[in-house]
Length: 143
Ligand SMILES: [Zn+2]
Image (cartoon, rainbow, N blue to C red; front, top):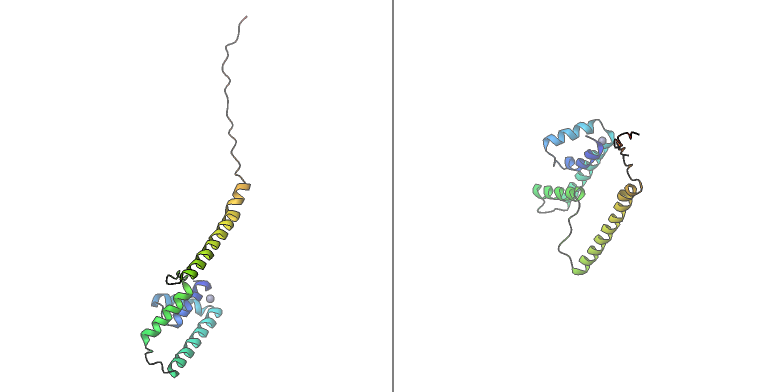
């Protein structure tokens, strides 16, 4: 496991949301990686603080299920690209539409520039086909 993958899963480990198998693999990496070790400690400390605050605030319905739901929400927001919001007003929808269009156009230009252009300016060398043209056999003209 590399750091990039490990760091994505550290919040899950801190929140005890990882499966045993994944947690074991992650822990193995953390044992040999100071950077990830520090990150896990930071997450655990932060979560501990949140729990203390939540208890002090006397959140009446603060139970384990809600905690898990919150963790899942926090993690999924971090890991997955946000889905397009459907319940929005028409003005905002229009703004989103234009923004999306602008992104698509820009992406199109970039793709055209970086992917297609180099190919068009460096055409593949065509293999030269050497045709062996057999000269027709002309019968010798006898005097
Ligand atoms: Zn690491």
